[in-house]
Length: 202
Length: 368
Image (cartoon, rainbow over the protein chains, first blue to last red):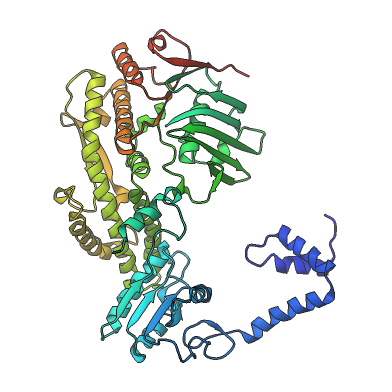
């Protein structure tokens, strides 16, 4: 094997540790970085260091934040009686983009998967239950992915919320069904049968 | 649905093969090891994404090459193409030039029924083959079943992992209980659908078998499951809820024993079918020829069932069907195959029986 420059090798190895990036892509990225001017490399390196130093997890909801409480939890105009439970902080970003939801969030940072060794204790479920006890919450929206693990976690959450919440609390789930702008002819059958089963009054 | 054209590259012993098919009977004639079954296998692989006789896709590749490619042109109301390519453990499926990422989007697109001499294992071997037979038919005609089955199998692995972890005290009881409850829900959907399917399907099988044997046989097909007492099941869907509750109770009751033994004792992964003739179990009682006729009856019933459920005939693939059948049964089968659907039949030579087909295309394979 031809010898490769050690600092280059180091960069390629590090880049290929990133998700979805294999060695081939890492090589291409490294080649690009070599050609680019120094400012770009500095800027990139700085931005990476900055997220490690500045980004924290919000103490209340687990969202990414630069302050102790994220800008959603600290906002005054949001409805604090509704909590939307999501799997990862990036889900919050997506839901926020819709502009439809004006409540608060709670991040579980994962879903129950026994085979992968993720137990309920590893998720921020206790924290959610504590929020339900101490804050005045009327509705919990479960916005977990409709995967096998997501469904198991949703059911677990439902049981735990009903066990702890003495007051009447409403538990809802995001609807599953046809994506907007889709054509029924090209929709896969089980999405369609789910949409039929969960049809709504119109 | 019919197949109009098939292209194969580096699949089994075919290097580069292309063939058009007529919409009636297609006879593939060739000596041993000329690749007759491989043609059927290629069509089967295209329809079901995997082979019926090799569990490992690597085995399908022609020796000395890196991968295979199959493309089929199909026609129902409109024309479709399906492609499958496999190389370096990477399988790509395309339907109408559109890349399919999830198998469940693909699974019911091409409907086929295959008869292969290996299928005697439905009668002779363990329950896994009988469940597979039911699973393939139901998955292709009922999406809800397919989804339930896949969810069930995933949850079953979760439960296995959970029981193992519980022994090491790494998991709490309420999590196992939760998994168990969800498992019972899918199990009841599966059992409910299997039960109703068998109830309907067995009539078709008995009808075909009696016609084939030219006798009035009291063949009984019994479905058995350890999930529940089946007596209470009715076709009515509103009863499914009661059924789910009953299953949930039974699953909960047995969970203690499962935890003690660290293994799963209950579930529809242990379901079975039993074939009986006048109280005798067919597996021990029937001759080789009778068993073969019964498998054939199962397949003919499958054709009828798919036709009833989907409104179209499946593509019928019959591998080496005429050997071991006597004249009467051959004649019946020929009449049945003359009734207007597409079939692809393999045989070693063009014998006098095959000449009885009214409308056929002959495809001869030579050793290369």
